[in-house]
Image (cartoon, rainbow, N blue to C red; front, side, top):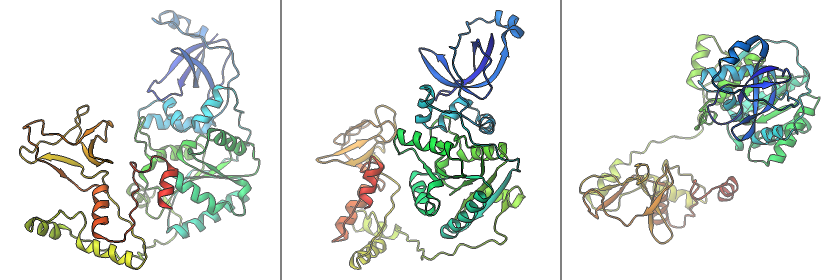
Length: 447
């Protein structure tokens, strides 16, 4: 009998569990273990002979469960498992929660159903870990990637191009699939689970070096011949998770490259301050011998809208959501048949509603967050952007019972109404999480 120490591949922060096993299971393999009332996949971290720790087992105050006889799956490479261990220490979380975050659900389900094959790609020859920086405009950067990909293919090695968003991944595939389309693969989570599993298996079964263009959730792909990881748009905040375990994919990629002795390239039009500092300190090497200044082709003008708003208050006119200069530019764009893009940092009409008598902010009854005013079909509504609860905006102040409630702040709906009122003939399309619930809806609005 053996004692198998595992980390469950689940969302919870559960760290290590131990089970009895009749067979000695290889460290790094994935098995199914009983957890509460069901079986879940788990990564084997350590295996001990039960005879060697017999006295310790007798002192346990809990019963050690047994795992059923099964064939373990060697799904992840040894380098990836070591990288997961280091990343888990860095973010003070469990290895299982990280694997769950960076392995697609389709693959985990296939593991549970026994549909996954062990990776067959050959181990590449030993190399050295190096960190490089590529800071170039987008067009020049894309051309540099082509040279790097061809160079790695010539050496019989694959490349993983990690992008922060699905849209960027799709754009890259269109750019690089010409000429090497049979060796270029796209891994992104918006495709069906069947398609994800199919692409995953195609990558593993391909003997020729491949270019993998994928989002961070597919970093666990077990191709042992990947010699280069490129972090595209390295400065993007999308690499960092907003939910537990709140890990940063850039840290994991660095650990994977280090453990597999691969090259790591931080790339983008601009790079993060962290990478810039490491370049100065000598820990990261620039790929270009000379630095290039960014040449702005557009003219940037900062408009102070305070004057228009002070004047509107003195003359008791409508509060201007946009300055007169901005409105003039929008009118000019409409008259010339051009397009204009207006970015707003807030949803709804107003980000806060305040009582004009006692200064009490209208808050959510459930979580006490400020309520946001939205325009409904027949009436205005108050919506909490934190917990999602809502109610009719026709209410009085809960503190002083006053009806003098004033909406404050500029939301995207208020800007839309202001443009439609002041820029005649303008066709206004609003793109936000309120108007587009899915990627296809967003694409339809843009088109």
